Image 1 (cartoon, rainbow, N blue to C red):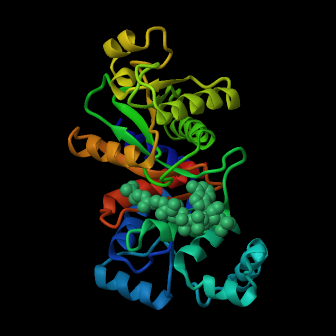
Image 2: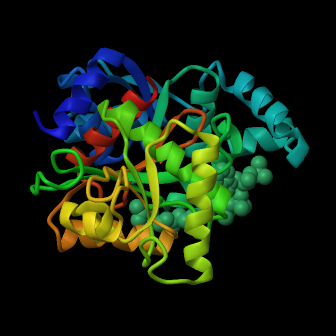
Length: 330
Ligand code: ACO
């Protein structure tokens, strides 16, 4: 079974409700219809009900099994405004400002999750990443023990000797331009959790660098060494090693030579990059040069499941992201 098929099977069993704030967007309507056809989730389209119904009719999208949440007319809007104002009072959000913030579809979608009307949210095919992330970060906050939300990709390679049968999780590829050693350690722990939650695999985490076990010295190498130490301190059961170069992390013969005795070298299935530059460039190179399938970005460390879509996302990408969010929502 393929990786996405395995995720979809878990999504089916989870029976989650997923808010889709971009309710009149063609790809979202088609993805919602496909998600119902595949029995993955109950999609909740946000927006003006007449506009959604009109657009669906134009596109020939059947709305059976799909809920519509009309943001302007919803009976829960007042309650959401009161709750938002309560949550953000220290940031000067009074009821009137909360009402205005709820005009933003992503903020509204996040509040539906926060107030339990939806289990997860997927958005971003018509807006920048930051528009989806900011309300999620501000309202849902982080999981206990995590101070930074990060973004992972499940990379699937035809080369079965890499990771676990070709599956490797990369992070942080999407959110934090710069991280402290402590935050990098948290990314390692969040990434291990994501691999386990999503695919049931036992994580072996490599903390990547341009140095392996002291082969080079520099402040940025020290940061990775310190992050590895902190991750072990926070989670003594975690199988983690660093600092490791990517070849030492992934290729058994190189790992044995450069980091003999390492529990991770040569067999890592989680790669933690030292910066967003490295992670974002790294996953795109693996995708474009290496021919890997990239599933994500998967937001991790957040107190609820919210996932961002690329503006170039296809209907199939969106259906996959909906399934991932449903599994994350447990
Ligand atoms: N984890 C947890 N909370 C966070 C994080 C984080 N990583 N980043 C910001 N926050 C919180 C802040 O604490 C703040 O909360 P508060 O309002 O309660 O005080 C709130 O979010 C806003 O913080 P800002 O510092 O104002 O955040 P900013 O406006 O810079 O936006 C964002 C944060 C959107 C994540 C920003 O860092 C960003 O744009 N990152 C890069 C995203 C990107 O472009 N990625 C590459 C493309 S994606 C791809 O290629 C797959």
